[in-house]
Image 1: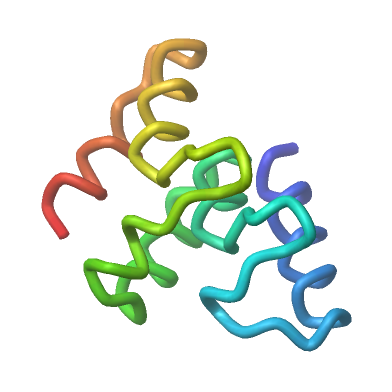
Image 2 (image 1 turned 45 degrees about the horizontal axis):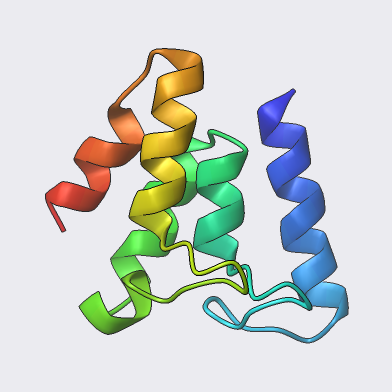
Length: 88
């Protein structure tokens, strides 16, 4: 279910001609979407290509990938996204 959401968001980015760290109309990057959709494989792939500054980018609401990971981990009782970001 979540993987499908992520694939749709990647397709949206590709159709819009956006790169691996380019934000959509809400300031969300593919990393933000990977975390939101709980796609661990996508997070690992995207993190391999980003610099630390790119990982720290904020969306329009001011959230970084870590903010979203913490918010998501609370709902899902899963801290994998937080751990992935901490070890970058």
